[in-house]
Image (cartoon, rainbow, N blue to C red; front, top):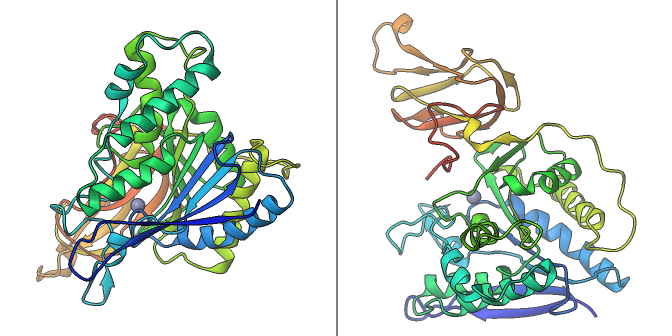
Length: 383
Ligand SMILES: [Zn+2]
């Protein structure tokens, strides 16, 4: 069987226009394990599009060789709504202009309660049978979602493809950044395997976030339903590995990087047995997993120009000067600079591309090993 292509047409948002999602499928519909990839849910994050472009032909080849055990679904672009948002010649794809400027990767529905209501009294001690019942309930809950508006229809269509996956990869990028991964703490060992195949220096794990990022919408119901119904992990494992894969920064788009990332993702799938065959030896880990609550988001104390004192990917110590913010209105150059200090020891993995910052803005992020007192637990890092 070879790749099939499906087109999903979204309801017209404005007269004379329609937008479409394209869906590629490999393997056998309904077979397990099911893998889901999407790229550029934040429409102006393009490295994942390049990785998908390089991964798709590798999956074609694997499919031709009969190596796909289950089913693989890929959206080559996840967000045609955001991709149409071009202002003054620049695509602005993080926030939806047409729905109160909501972040495209926030407020995805938490289906936990609705799924728990559907499966109450139906789950036993067999984890495989329970997983089947859970996935049917998840799909039924998605089928109940509204689809009148273009945004609603987009949400429902995407979740209808992804919510019952065994592996869900949401390919994003940061501003200027090293590779980094987010996953639920229960999936620490799996996400570390992915990190090793992708050569990722920062892996952040959390205990289930509020705020509705796409990955948590997939991972959390399994743990939440387990807790609500008083089951243990052997009866209801965390059967959807969902990860946000941050493929460096916005301008890190090249054939070389795309091919490298596609190879890492492909090898991980072989390693996990999603694709038959022998995976290359897993490379050594570049890091230990760290808590999301251990990330120090560096805030600019004043408005001004950023003069970075550390480089992206550098390991820094607590108390070190990471950057200086220059008050361009200050008459005395000796008084113009305010330092931004590291509040943890760790890796500087993200930097703002804007070199003129506003007071209170996040200018960079350091991944540290210890949960920080000034952080609100595992809360999301940005709006
Ligand atoms: Zn993103």
